[in-house]
Amino acid sequence: MDTILSDTLRVGDVILPPARELNLWMRRHVEEHKLPETALYLTVTAIREGTPDKRGRWLIVQSDQTDEWYSGDTYERRLPFTFKVRPVTAWPLISRKAGAP
Image (cartoon, rainbow, N blue to C red; front, side, top):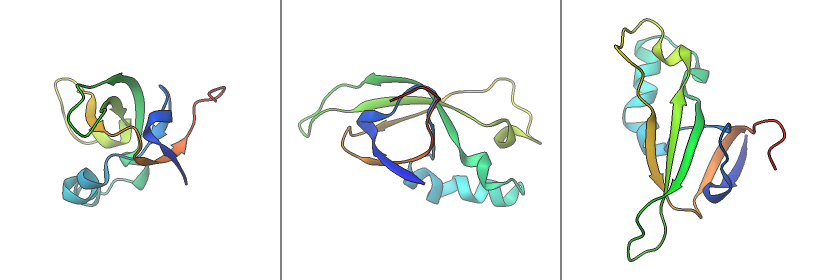
């Protein structure tokens, strides 16, 4: 698995969720529902600048979870998985959308 700076994420990239979320509850959800590890993957759907603070810039990353993630659960609607990240944070990249730099 490659690691890239979050500032280089692009729409269509497949990534892992933030480590904090993975450790707090997402891995437990996968185990409890007997889902494959690939259920954790996120596909980036939008990236925008957040409001900077005294430490600098933020990026707001919006993504979709996999169909596997939702298997067996009934949701009225699927909500995007959104999180903030610093542009210089190293991020695990599962795959890059074809044709993206």
